[in-house]
Length: 399
Image 1 (cartoon, rainbow, N blue to C red):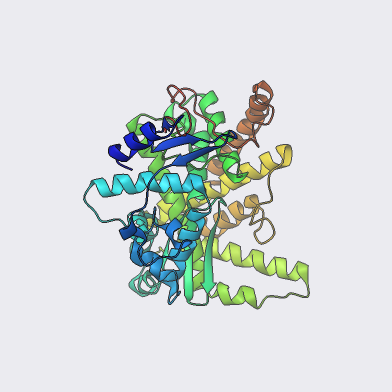
Image 2 (image 1 turned 90 degrees about the vertical axis):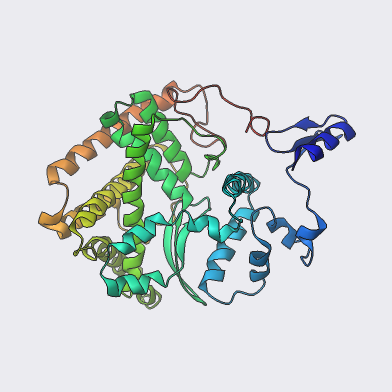
């Protein structure tokens, strides 16, 4: 919405207020409408009313592609578009991303935008032998803007798709702040706040609007180090899903033993152990990448173990991996055993990291007790890093 449209609405409608993006309109019964844009006839030409909701974040040719899913690329586009359209807050995030993307002169498309975030799986694939890399490059892969912090290799009717949710990336980021914080001289209050944000992401209570409302701005040097660690964790996560595909696990799961739950669970657990190890073993020709991504993988599992320990003490929404995946602590030691001398960490290193997590578990209980918010873990909204955030802003009015 340009300044001329905003000025016209502010003048024409009593009680209208300027928002950070667009205009807020107050109704007679106390409801508020946030007008962020006015669609032109050219933008909606040829689209039905339902399809018009996708105009804010999809190119028109992408909206037309959604009518008929012809291949796995269309399937991934559909997953992204449906995840966004059902969430007004994620629509707002995508509108900001689009504005920044187009400011550089690039024509917008949702697919093009997500291609700009493809470094995680592309870097992993580039470290693989050519035969494996060729197979995996053919699989549509990337981030998905969903609330659930998860990753999957999906066998759709149009072919395989590998996705990792943006929520999982955010979970890794704040867990890295919490667990590695002492290495960067980050105080315990900020580390526990970061742990709380990570927990709330998994509990689906933290607002997924980090682009609009950063929870804190770290010094550039520390931010770069944190992002490098998160990249290794994300590469391991994509590698784990690619390992499922290359090992033939996708078809194996559908043929597992439905009549015997214990046997089926053991079978599923074995597949997870194998995928963890294969995500690293596939990188045998690039030892530096294997070392880095193994480190990321062990810490991704340490973060999950920390989450499980907090879940036992404070409760948590059911996790999508609870039934199909072994306990994180079992995965940590199984991966360490498989890597043996090639592991970037000694057993003592892992024990030390688990001890750090134990300290965080104890500190988290005190953190909750000292909070003035009665439902700190479950209210929908945002938690901030106290030492790295300035004045808190008003939702919609200031961001």
